[in-house]
Image (cartoon, rainbow, N blue to C red; front, side, top):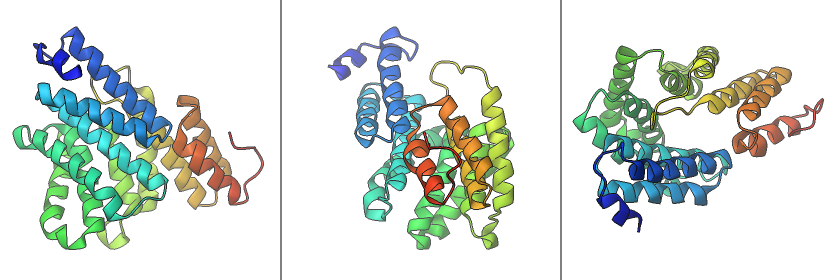
Length: 256
């Protein structure tokens, strides 16, 4: 039924396209908010069906983003093996590379690919020889085109947080990057149709993690609260990070 509807579309601005696309985007956002893998996989199917009828970078991007979000949720839930994650990791990369191959300066695809190549190398270090140059190239493109892009700031900070010092990792730098990403995202106006607008709750969650790591639990709670002010259902904080903070001995306030 969905494919039949999409066959008659003329452009991404058509009302029918917008209706179906927004259904996929909203399903993606609900799925990530509540860490519901079934909803995320439903969003993936919606974007796959749109992609069958309409070849467009915006659709490829959201296919990649959906699978990136599935990876995020698998990590939260402790499903962190390569066997569990590789189907979604490979699909996310393949969808975003479709964009990159035809439009090498499509910034938002470069931002996600930088992160995804890093994940792949983490699972398969021997692939570093081929993937590390690609990863570096994605970062170079992002810095050249829009160094203040908030999702690039966020992904760069994630790299700084996780990477060993010998590869440029620096958790103090990561903290500054998360702060900058959060400030930019909080000040951004509503984006136009389809434009990526995610990242604020993630940035606040990461700030909470950084402060928790440093033993500054009051600041950690402040940023977890900020994430829940933006999205009261944000599962990463509500189900995982807040309980972890409480279990670490912080109990001046009950977790939401």
